[in-house]
Image 1 (cartoon, one colour):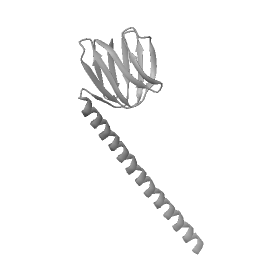
Image 2: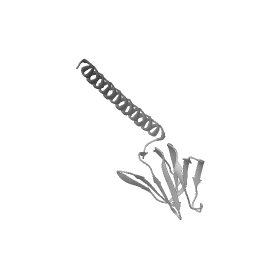
Image 3: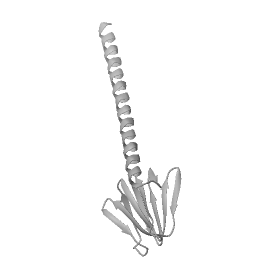
Image 4: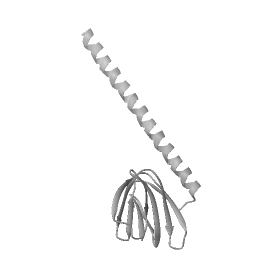
Length: 132
């Protein structure tokens, strides 16, 4: 089998793969060379890959889709950590989650400030109209 990991900025390829293990919304799925063709939504987690020479590789992904057709498997995901030791993948995924959470918090704070400014502006206009 061949495996392609597709992220918006690049494609990672693995060739001569005899096992691909993913976590889908329906549970864990293991693709072997003559596995039935299918498609599934992935949850954030690890993809385990074993090549024909028994080397194991891991790829950390954020959600996505896996599609198997014939001897080709494609995983499309918005973000992936490829080619690192298992512990480093966990650390990188945790770092990315913290960064996203921080950006979300900053965006929420900025939105709250805009709401406060809008409320003050409305109150000032109502107060000036009441005085006239």
